[in-house]
Image (cartoon, rainbow, N blue to C red; front, side, top):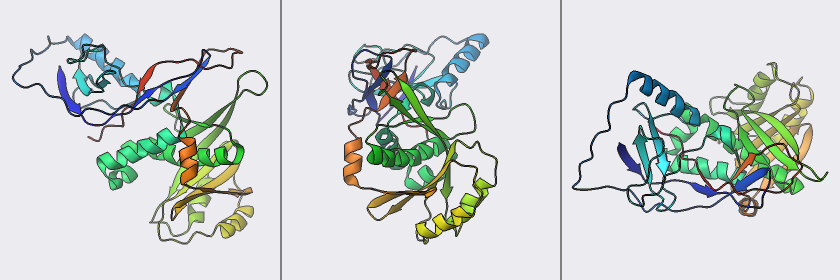
Length: 319
């Protein structure tokens, strides 16, 4: 049973050579909402209680919240780009193109690029409004991914190396991870930063109050603390923060601050001090060349990439 069709979506296509690691990006524009006038659809046969339970458990595993009705899942037609929410059918076909539709992928399945995370947060703000995007708990993972993306772009600007974002879906910490594949030794060595993300909100006057509160807790020494300075209108003196961090007992390996100042996004490491990175428009344009998705494959010495086809990752529901 088809419930409704939606307007916007992201469609990404992986590309590259055969390998144990995979990535890709391809964007298609939706032709718009779909409807069928003058036809009445027959309701599907009712499910038994056991079938409903099995369906609910299976559909919850994709990493996204379900709709109002148990078993509702959004699918995408790879041909016409039409999105539809469908009840009860795990392998639906597009009613216009008659091709099998693509189910949504969750965060547990893929690493995402910094630009994909940034673009995803932009789409959430455009769809649900800036206030809801910044405040509602249902978009917390996307906000943390956006902040992590800024650190990833700063590291890319400093080193010229590609970094990928892994969003935590099982444990409470870390919030995100930054992953990089080092192929210089001739194999595949994964370098990982585990990141705790916190926001500096308007109700707190001094950013050091936020940092001190985090440093007072017990975190693993390999964690990075990443502070998103969203407190517009407040004074942020990086030199003063660096001096205060020298006297603060911190459990974190490094402490970074992300702050948007005019057209520039500053990413600054305050403990230990340096570097200062200014992210400008050109940096975002250069990073957009990176593929949108990457998935780890089986253990192998191969350093090539394998095409995994199309990936569909809709933004979270707002209801």
